[in-house]
Length: 186
Image (tube, rainbow, N blue to C red; front, side, top):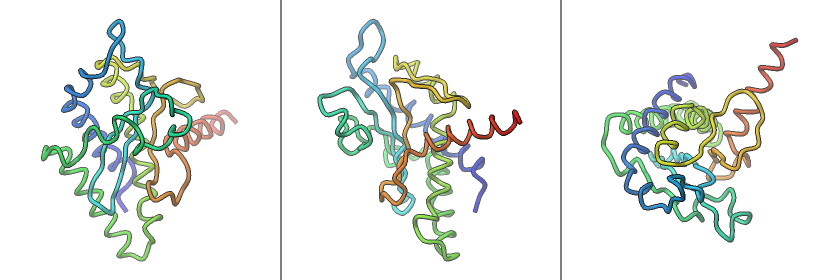
């Protein structure tokens, strides 16, 4: 399987392309003082078995706690998708995802194992500072994430939509970064 760093780079380019092409969506979200205060998270929705991925935005609403980790229930579910553009970054990201998924399943991995590293790569891409900086240009107060635990009102999320692994892969990546940092201090 391709290394996570190579997948991260392709996914990051595709995420930034999707964000760039979504100005109309961001402009339509109500602002206060130039800030979009209602958006509390972004999800990268990866479907390697369907050759597709998308971005979803979570906003504050009455059902926030009930649907906190359910992108399909959010008002801005899949506001940007790989089906909306045939740009090179999106085509390359989907092609890599499809090729790697097919190769992994052909090699005998089940679908959960075949997609696990893609979810990790997707989380790494979504947590890249370039994503936070791009979201900030649209007025979203997206935090820069490093190798420390932090409690922000805004969350980055990547989930296995088949629910094989019941975790937010972004939190898993952050926890691994903290672990590596702590181990280096010994």
